[in-house]
Image 1 (cartoon, rainbow, N blue to C red):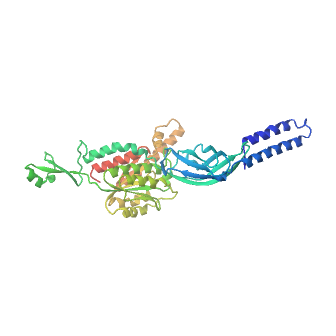
Image 2 (image 1 turned 135 degrees about the horizontal axis):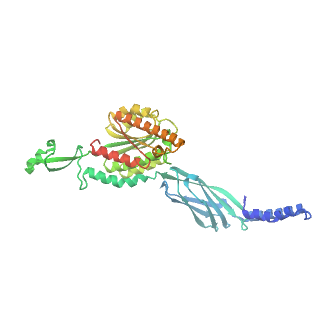
Image 3 (image 1 turned 135 degrees about the vertical axis):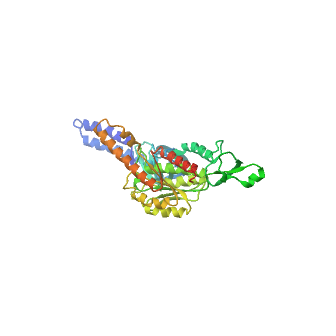
Length: 435
């Protein structure tokens, strides 16, 4: 049972004058008790005439997935199986991160009829957003009291990474087509995949002459090549404690996901096979053997539920994890943090094992606030802040130099710039014939 504002107002209507004028009224206590009794009797009658909220059958319909930041509609179908008209309100008890907003809706359901209640969800966190209960409140005809019941109506929706970096994909695909010779800009890499034959011109490598075609055409013909396709790209995302830090109001892990999705979309269009591994001390997510549209679909589904783990990364197990994915030379992309020499010790210790066989790229987020802090030195506090920012950037530079000495490539950028920067490095490696 619950009471409404009308019940409180009715009590105040009779009680307040009695309290204020109690000394001048004879038998004020009796009058007060009589008034409260009358109000309680009215509330009891009102409650008895209210419909039973437990006679409501609840059905829920939800889309299975939604991208982070997008809006989606949750639909509740309420059927009144009782004998009385139900006038009341319904509260859909979504967890706060689902972004339900105003989740209380008035309802008026005659006996045997069905009504639809919709709630607009705008989630602001990735992962599984869940709901377990629906609370139904049925008012009496005087709206003094109400019956209330909480009914089971479980539901869940998977909130996917937003993939805002997809806006960079068309420009990178155009460069990829140029690299592969599919547009009017015929760029030939030093790869090993045969592309076409053309007439010899001065300056061509004589080793590219096709003598059989030359004999058939009575003209010197040379082979042209393009960078080899169908290579392996292994993306390893560090999900340990450093991935929980927020840079530019975004977790490092979310930035790594954006970069991984853009690189996977680009590499799959280039004909390369992409595998994903999210790891800290155990495998948090894995995508293998998917191609085309299925690749991105499986990646966003897998990444959606991964959260940072407050443990140290076990870099010693990463080479073995890569070997379980492929035994061939591949591009191994490590999305991690390189902002502290001490924290990067484990990464540096295993890099020689990876660079001995694979092309390794280490991608990390840098804080744009550090760059802006360096330029602001107007007072003592800003000078100390600038010194700390300089030290942080020097640490990043030291770790990056160590990675390059061990044979790896380094990509560092702000959260907004890291995905396109990583895609550009992939294209540069393609153009150089290293993939």
